[in-house]
Amino acid sequence: MPLAQLISTEHLQQRLGQENLLILDCRFALEDPAYGRRSYLDGHIPGAHFLDLEQDLSAPVVKGVTGRHPLPDPSALVERLRSCGLRADSQVVLYDDGPGAFAARAWWLLLWLGKRDGLYLLDGGLKAWREAGQELTIAPPSNAPGDFSAQPDSSLLLTADHLAQRLGNPDLTLLDARALPRFRGEVEPLDPVAGHIPGAQCAVFTDNLGSDGRFLPAEALRERFDDLRGERPVDNLVAYCGSGVTACHNLFAMSLAGYPLIPLYAGSWSEWITDPARPIATGD
Image (tube, rainbow, N blue to C red; front, side, top):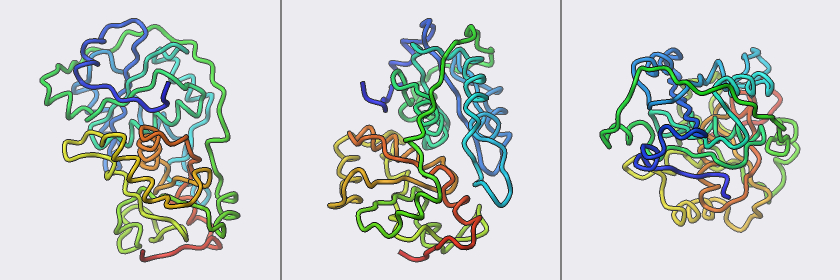
């Protein structure tokens, strides 16, 4: 069973009400942290629970130490997911109302906790659901509490120190999911230092999508990441972004394309720059 799976609005609508279906609404806005919950309360896919990027899918920021969205405490996240009804056999559908980065963060966190099957992103997100004429509701979900047992997988992570030790390796392919102007250091709307980790390549996460907001076909995604990797080995791929969110979108797309799950530098750029001794680069 592939780790990354897509579900269409039609197929999700047909499965609404199934006993083992768990729908998670991951809407968020960096410029308005209350947006996600407010939007969820205004209307969501029937049966969906809400997960907040900062309250549920991240730990508190430690200024000068962590990035903007540190990984959550596994036990706290598991407790929250159990309260939504997560079980080992749950079929989990994740969505947001943007390109899918927040849903992909939740997907990756579930993988990290040991949930390796039954994970789907709603292709096209809430926009596609609305365009298909599907209903929204303000009714709260009614799943019984779940009993999912987690086994966090540290092999999916790379720390700043480990990454720093690998920067001189010519086989390293470091994929930065941020927009090109941020990668180049021309603008930086979120972090106090602009630029990228030396040796990285710009792999803008929204390039995983077509003009309709849905993921590109697997063959096109494979070509995209093969071009970025070149002749370098697959086992030297690493993903990062600004804070460990949009990189998960690349990880999802790579999995759709048939790549193995590569390590995530979860602290990403916003953690990297907390230590002035770490090197940075600008330009292409």
